[in-house]
Amino acid sequence: MEIMKEKWSTPVSTVTIGATKEDGGTRTSKIVVGGETTLPFLTFEGEIPHAPAIAFEVLDMVPEEYPEALKDYYGDVMHDPGLWAKKCVEQYGAKLIALKLLSAHPDQKDSGAEEAKKAVRAVLNAVSVPLIILGPGVHNKDNEVLDAASQEASGEKCLIGNATQENYKTIVASAMAGGHSVTGESPIDINIAKQVNILISEMGMPLDRMVIYPTTGALGYGLEYAYSIMERARLAALMGDKTLAMPMICFINAETWRVKESKADNPIWGDLKKRGPVWEAATAVAFLQAGADILVMSHPEAVAVVNKTIDELMGKKLAGARS
Amino acid sequence: MLIIGERLNGMFKSVAKAIKEKDSKVIHDLAVKQVEGGAHMLDVNVGPASADAVAAMEWLVKTIQEAVDVPLSIDSTKPEVFEAGLKLCKAKPLINSTTAEKEKLDILMPMAAKYDASIIGLTMDKKGIPSTGEGRTELALNIIAAAMENGISTDRVYIDPLILPVNVAQDQCSKVLETIRECKILSDPPPHLLLGLSNVSQKTLNRELINRTYLVMAIAMGLDAAICDSLDKELVDSVITAELLLNKDIYCDSYLDAYRKKAVAVR
Image 1 (cartoon, one colour):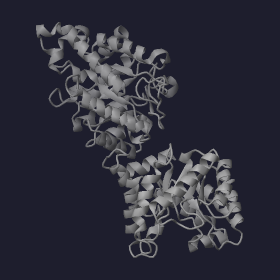
Image 2 (cartoon, rainbow over the protein chains, first blue to last red):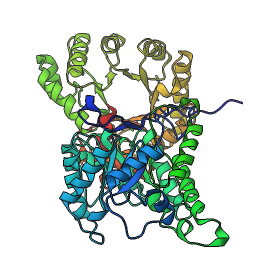
Image 3 (tube, rainbow over the protein chains, first blue to last red):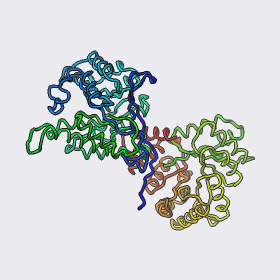
Image 4 (tube, rainbow over the protein chains, first blue to last red):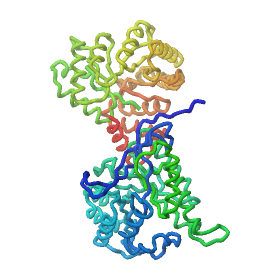
């Protein structure tokens, strides 16, 4: 039987996170994502030059509520983002760290630029892998701490996020000044995803320094709708829409660890400490199939399972670094 | 939708003058402005007044390619003028045009094959333009058959069903729309369908309105190329919007800018 092959016109853009000494940074490795010329894992049809990457999330504070299943792994290092990142890299094999500046949230510590710089510096000093830096998701605080973080990590080619349709100018300007890339966030809405990308690129940010954050839902919580949006964006990209042809990032952990299936102690549902990572891994694998290039995750066992799945899906064509 | 800029034509007095005086600047400006306006390709016609049409075509093609790198549509009726333009084209050109007459097809189809050019086929022959949609479609089929005989893929053929001015032959406007739809199923891959748009509004009062209204109607029927005025912003905006409404492009608030940006990126 002949296999039907689709020939697409446009590749997904390639984004590099991390700058080594030769690039003017201090990282010892880089993460490259994107560059696909076909839909996820259809290696018989086109090129998948870089495997999806997994980033371990590190917070800059000990949150009041943190899943017990995760505390087993990070409880001893959560007081120090540097130690937390170090543990992810040294014990769990992380090749990419996503530092979330949660403490700047007004409902948390409402911390500012100085604390943000300190946290970024701590992680940069503790580990030599590339960094994603995320604000608390509140506009004025995002602007304040992401600007500070961009300066502190200047030249390290981090991925900074998230810029939104309502709040992108300061974040994009800071990221550009620091030589970083930026994520553009949209609320599970392909039209707004495209609009955000246009707004960001109109500020002069090159298309190969932008990543789409389409927002998602966890397994059982709207995953299939997010999936369909990502798939449509990727199809449009491959058919030639440059304003949607960026790699995509999914915050798997943020979705997984707030649903009851990963948190509620219900004996009928089986062992809680296994259920959480299973939920996280299942959600992650679904989004890999939707076209995710970067997954932000938390549970080391879930990451291990997803890495194994990525290896299998990539087959022998495996290339590029990942956690 | 392929937009072919119509302004580099010796029928326009300013262009005729520029050709005569070898005024490169006028030609450069007009080429750049048309591309900036949304043209993906530029039509090149030395016009009837040129004393030496071959030399004029050579100069015009060279001069345009100094300013822009979009492909060119070489517009003539004379084989030697086609040759003069085609041999200088850097990007794969378009021959504008052949009719369905055997004598023309026998010369121009091999020429298209030789220069790896696409070709426009007008649905007319010695007897003129058929007054019915069926008659036009029949001639389109002859053109497509001639392309295939010369080893030219059918998707390199642009069928022009020849729109007539609305104030001369009003009933023809709907017949051309029918032809567009019918021609799309003549071959696999289907031919492209093209209009020399401005003809529909010759000597009418509301030229721009008629042009863009008809163009949108034709796009809905399957038209995918037009020789038109890409300096007419509302016309180009209408094209972009028509394609959006046909779900060929994903909506966003800045879809007009995005389309133009994409077009530039593709170039």
